Picture: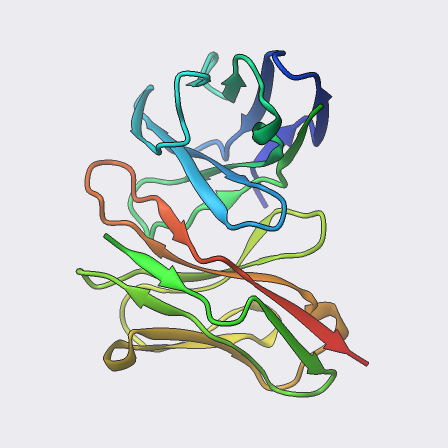
Length: 114
Length: 116
């Protein structure tokens, strides 16, 4: 069964460093998302991406964040200068065109900023 | 704007007992509703979903949920809890913000503990 894959599963970084989280969505899906979950809190929407551009972003998704689909298979989230409060689990998701809107999630990338 | 409210951040049941996790939604349009489960140190897995049609929907692992428009609810139930059901459960609604997004809006989650 096709699945969304994310790398790395866990990354530890120093405050101020750049981080790139990678995702490979399901191959025939056209809509891509990043969500984050701070420990013990709810799953929050960050950004959606369709047709090679951001379709919607939340207040959380400020200028420190960017997304890219560099090669037609990967979907990346970059945090330019990490802050302590960026420590969270980041989930990538994708969905196909039409259907019932079900999002398929990856296993997540845990980011720890020291 | 759509939203979901999950009553009870922690629910504890005995093995074999009924599981009831509550979810109420707010939506100005007919909602698409979902329940996701998150096992420890894992990602989000779809349990079940309601879109249109039958209001009682069955999902994986013996879970089911009933869409009740009059009560704006979509509570998750399972007749008999199993130890392996211990996890965090998230109710979610599709946001009809328009455009291509159709993002999911999640509730705050309910952590289910199952006691032997």
